[in-house]
Length: 135
Image (cartoon, rainbow, N blue to C red; front, side):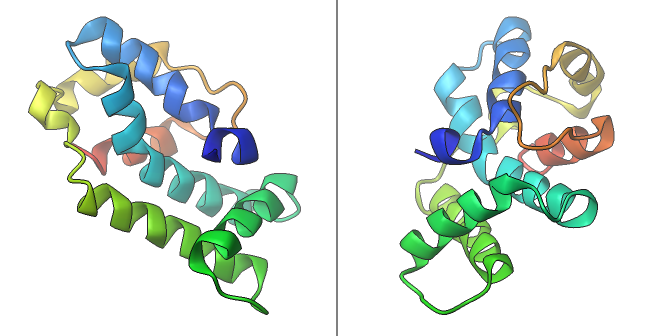
């Protein structure tokens, strides 16, 4: 649902090289990185592309999930991030280090990561930070 509404290509862009280098299930990578990726995309769009159409899509989803009304798009995007982070913790999605992914593995993973179909071009440092958030 989130991929269809917000085009979060970075999650899948990371899942492929991680699964290729290490024994980690694709679904685990996608699930554990989703909240961090939504946060990274939201922060990047807010800073560099405040008119990005994906903001409105994320806000609609945040509004539906938060069940709030009459708030700003920024409020709903923040709510979406918070809800996804809560779900990540409630569902006890494993951190990447459970699968032996270490900081030292990040360069080879990032070298193979594709940022296609993402609502905004994330920098290498932004992608690194979102992965490190789940180590």
